[in-house]
Length: 319
Image (cartoon, rainbow, N blue to C red; front, top):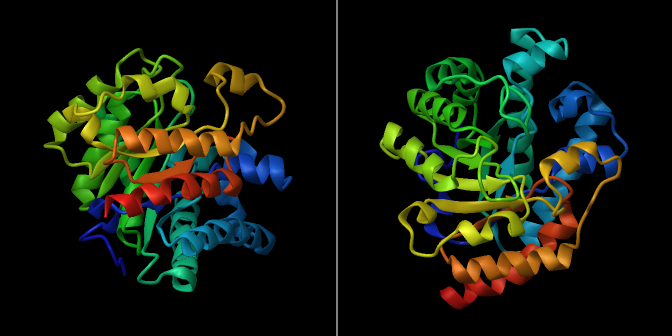
């Protein structure tokens, strides 16, 4: 049964950590082959489950050590109909994988949750198409129908919310928000931007957030930015702007490279964890409403520890 679905604790403003880049960590650091970058396939194998437990426990330990909240994001970014079918999963198999992913996070939550470390379970929704390119474009109603299957499964589990990561065009994000509203699940929308701070379609982040809010009566609990380096978006986040106030979370890339450059790279660019922590602290100082902090491509527990170390004192000072 969902513990926090009725009142998400991260909305109270304390620091909540997320994990880093699960797929890049498993592939480049652990040497695990992930077909189509699909971490959910590991749920089918004892060794794969063990790898996922080890991965998530590193972040549980950080949240416990620093006394922060934690959002556990399910490894289901690819567990939607098209990708699952391409990987040989039946609709029933896909649904079971999504259920298993939430059950795994329940197990981990029971190990770490305390008064100092509230743990929120999120069902991860990924794009229908490529994470970097706005292909397989749908209108919002097609997107609602497409994503309602996975969201419907999450609604029947202990998931407290769903998070749509690497949304690269607004209609898909809007459709996910509509599907979550229909399922009565809190939803977070996380947009991915290019080096100019705009979505791959050229739309501004401001326009995208305002369009989703306008069409859904501001249903998303909040918005995030992921799969981009802070250098790519910090200049467009103007303090005091109403649309910026709707952005509560950041899951940045370790690398300053563009998506096109990352797509061509054969080696992982892990950037500088300490520098990334400093950049997050600088953003927190400019935008004190931002309190959900984690990583995306190229980041791992080292980056999240530096973020916690740099940002936790800012939260204590604000009390």
